[in-house]
Length: 555
Ligand SMILES: [Fe+2]
Ligand SMILES: [Fe+2]
Image (cartoon, rainbow, N blue to C red):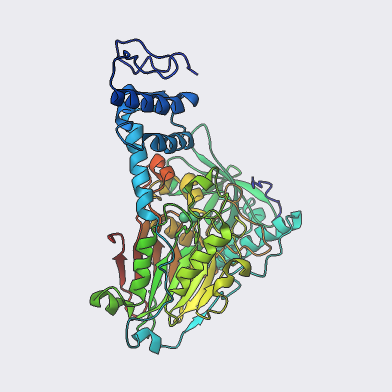
């Protein structure tokens, strides 16, 4: 490209604290905030008073306002002091400065969820099918990993030089503009330099969006560029394409149908690279093979639903009843789309959310689970933003030092994120989905993307790009743009948002977000995000049937 995108982001109310809450008429002890009692109180009452004083003292020290009623409630437990210590930590973590009944019940709910999710790991056993030979074990694997230069593993060449950025944007523009040219007849597509000399007649131009803004009159003004030049392009405010155009993001590569008017290029329509295969038929394979999808296990987190996950593993081994065994018999592949473990230091104060605080121990436990998958099932494992590789996309496969525990397992395959594989002849795109956050915050048409993640995936397919906007999302400018797609996949598997979402046939692609095995975290509670844990989608690659098995009901 002519320009180099320069955006690189790696990167006491002490005295009054009881006044609002206490309604007591008795005088207050200024140290504890408690009502004073007379010396004739019984021993039991004295003990209770002492407990209240100790508990209240904990919060006072941290300048936390406490409601006397809530203090009463908290101190009914024999373990009040221990509870108060945990509660104080919870309040510090969430920036809560008023301890009232609402805060107390939030903490109690949170503690109950955590207790439910943590189980000993010693129960994990090596995978072994219940009895006899499952149907999938009689099928030879039909799997080609990381096809078509789709995987950055062992190919990362970025040094962060200016040339890397130029090569990166050139690669994106060349590959996506080639797809766009295939869609429009060559004679009516002109270079931007040539467009400036055209008058009246409608023609097509292909450009990468450099900037986007709304003028004070409400029109949309884009700057678009190709290899030679950059020109402004206007979308009038009353244009029928205005609503759709509001979703245009910087760095997308688009074809604009346009005309010149008073030296200004005016757009009448636009097309995205993925529209090439808009009416593509869905492909199916010939053999009865199923693939199960997982993501966002977050092993090591106090919220990891281990018992439920072990139930899923028992299902894969045909040990959860006849009806489920009938489904599991045909599972030949498992795809795991990242956030395998919770990691260490991924966000501030994460250690408070971990039950396993050692990254190697987290992966050792994760590998124990992998070993519990029967050997006749081929497992594709990609990393996510919580895993022990670079945080920016594209991510290489997990290094051996973390997963040496399954080094000898020939059915476990560690791949990069994103990457494309041929499974039973069908193309499978596996991408963790870290860029989904950026799509939702930058495209007003995707505001409900956390509730319906499949809509974000549809936009990715429309653009043939997993993360067009450079800068806000964490991207590495490799000489090849691994986030750009050269073709539309048959199956698109992603995760990251902890919410299951599906589109069974979007222009021939089955889109699957496989949710999570992590319970709702405190952070998600504060954001109002409702995850859908323990729901495992399973796709019949010869039937096109998608079924979801729910493992959330395990006691
Ligand atoms: Fe996750
Ligand atoms: Fe994630």
